Length: 154
Image 1: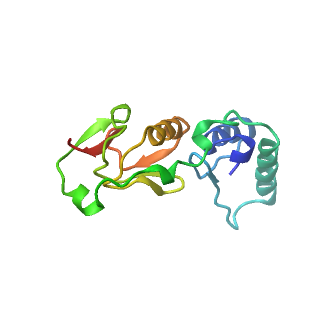
Image 2 (image 1 turned 90 degrees about the vertical axis):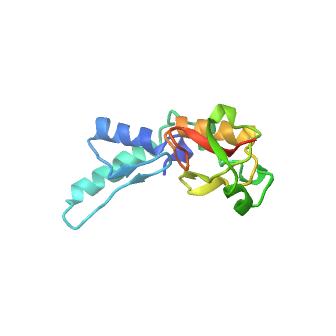
Image 3 (image 1 turned 120 degrees about the vertical axis):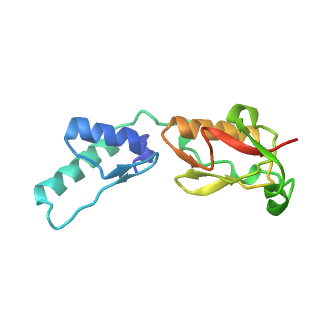
């Protein structure tokens, strides 16, 4: 992770590939993943270390970006038990329309993989603001359907 220097995993992956000729196995919002095997030559591993050190010493484009801050987990007021919420009629709304609605499904941000809200919790404006910034910076949210969130019909 180079987030401390202001690099999302996706931005760092692109610079490593284009500028240094280093290809990550996988990149996400926060992390880069590399598989190093016995088949790697020493000079390849050294080049990877040098490229990562150079990026860590350079302020990245996401320095101070809101999408890299921790999510507002503790804010969701529980309005219904998860069981009751899951049994209610539901629909999908665009994120911008979901503020103040009661969630009918889980939505989890990856990374870190912890749900932002669970069925029965109220979806707050700050959660939606954080989620929009998170997605804009290359994050992935499990539980959305075509960019929409499942809420209880009111």
